[in-house]
Image 1 (cartoon, helix red, strand yellow):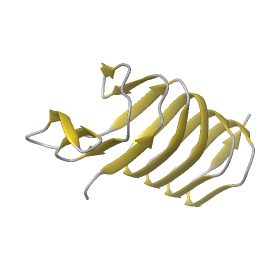
Image 2: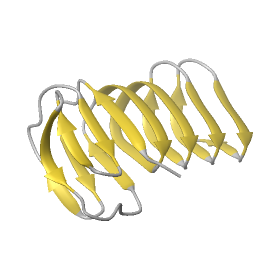
Image 3: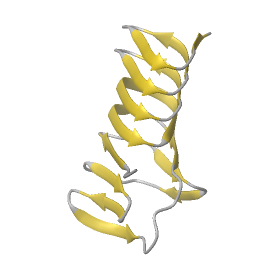
Image 4: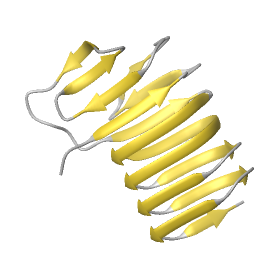
Length: 120
């Protein structure tokens, strides 16, 4: 299964599988072949890793196809196809197809088809 995660307007650092990326401006796209900012590669992979993405700071939107995502800050909207979502504060909605949602406060709706929803 392929991976594609898009992160828009991140104001903090991103830790991906233990490697930290700081002060990245622009649209970040994480795929099986690498990490790209505004379409330009900042890291390329020969073999796709298993993805765990941790964002330290605020981010506008996250759209993920196959990764566990954690935001230690505020996020407006999160959509995940396969993977767990953990957030401190969500201003809008959180949606997963297959995965658990663990969030503090949520301003909108939280939905999952196959997983658990935990708030608090």
